[in-house]
Image 1 (cartoon, rainbow over the protein chains, first blue to last red):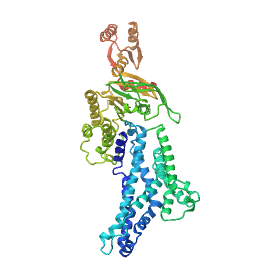
Image 2: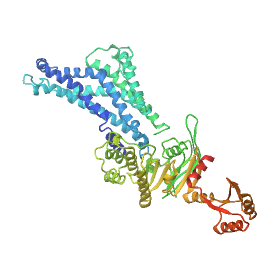
Image 3: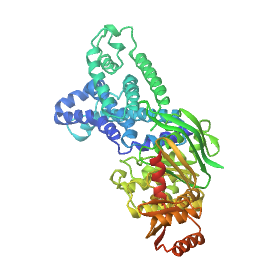
Image 4: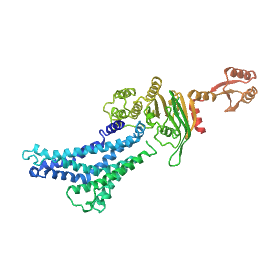
Length: 259
Length: 302
């Protein structure tokens, strides 16, 4: 029960925060761009809507920009911002004098971050769906997509990307809990992301924890990644997530100064 | 019974600076305990140790009759605190800020309006806490500390940033809470005049060492003991000799004869003796050390 109350309390802190705006704006950013393009070029839109692979096409288009840069960057920013709420407002000391176990605080904060990620994925998928059907509702010359919406494919794709983001969440959470200065987690996150852009082309790139979103996108496009033939990047992502989270948990519990 | 009983608290910072050295604190249940000391004396470190914000290195801490280490959550359920600058979420309103804590403490929702009214912030509406003045922030911090009806309130320099009117209001509020609700209050300050009108007990700390701890009246007794008499005459040497011949310890200071505080009849008798010996007495004054000078003396000696 205490955990639920703690989650409620943590969730309330995100209200009107930069992180919560980031989730909403980030979720709809790409779909709005795609929708605008589809509204501006109705002939192309009509042609695309008749395609039997329409929803797969729009899914790939949407994830292209998102997976390579925006999603990892958004995760880095949102995770750091949520954790930094306590440092920024000087509230760690107040939080640590509430009658809660340290573990409750740790897991409820992480829970809220993961919940916000889910919120982002939900909004993003709603955005993709709307960008697919809205042109037909707004423009007379455009018909509704012929293909039935492939819920399962969308769910599976989002699920994989969610899992592939988890190492980024865990590492950012770890660093953000340890450093008061917001630039530290941000610097670490951006540095790792840039490194991942290079590492993904490397034979052993899969051992680098920030590459999984990129790799998953290549797999989504149907690319034959030789080096990943016998590797399950999602399992690697979950592994890194567990290691980073446990390390973060131990460091958090053993902190000598708690505010 | 003691609300706080800490024995042998010592703390050293990673850079080797010794912040506390064998500090003992005993806060009586139902008292208002003034924790005094100049800036950097170790007040905040002590309070942070008591609340578990710093990892304890040496000593024992009992709060509300129980070991803090073993009953941390149970104890914190009954403690309200405000450590240093107020903690609040600047992007949330006063009500939202308190709701954050209300969820954790699981106290009734109507308590939020009650405490906001109590600290005079009931009408802040949709204004974000980040737009509050320092005094308003401080009062919101107090409201958060009071939200769950604690039996012990730990306030670290709560009057920081308050104007004189605000300080008086705060003093009244704390006095009422102590009197009507029986809340034990620990209040730290570096200014004695600010809290001497409020507290029942006092602890004075300097350079990490506890210099005095006891009821306020004990400190006042010391104050009385520290007061002295000053005689001003036309012939100090002869007067001094005469006074000493009556077995009174006396000495000269700035052309005045200084002697310990005496009962009124003894002062009259000494005066009579001086006059009878043709010494003109220009003035007899009782010089009283105020609490401030005792505090200064204690901290300076240390």
